[in-house]
Image 1 (cartoon, rainbow, N blue to C red):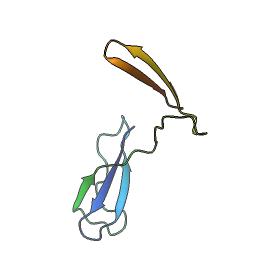
Image 2 (tube, rainbow, N blue to C red):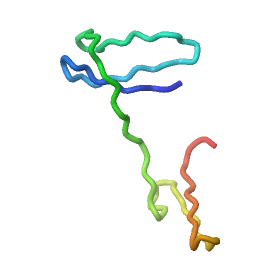
Image 3 (spheres, rainbow, N blue to C red):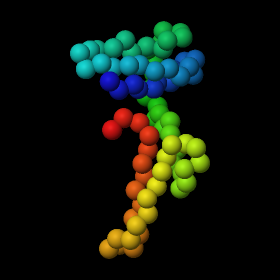
Image 4 (cartoon, rainbow, N blue to C red):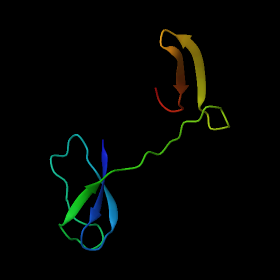
Length: 79
């Protein structure tokens, strides 16, 4: 179920709309002023990857491979 972020072109409010697979249409208007003039904006990611563990739950494994060195990141979350 993707969540898309939008910005109202009238009041500059940013809001999200959740789309479900069973839903053919969604109400595409500003949640603050009900304007229909909106644009989709690029969402920011909600995670970071570091080279060390640092208590974040992220771990790395570096090894030699044919292109020089390869690093694998183990990011916490569902697999």
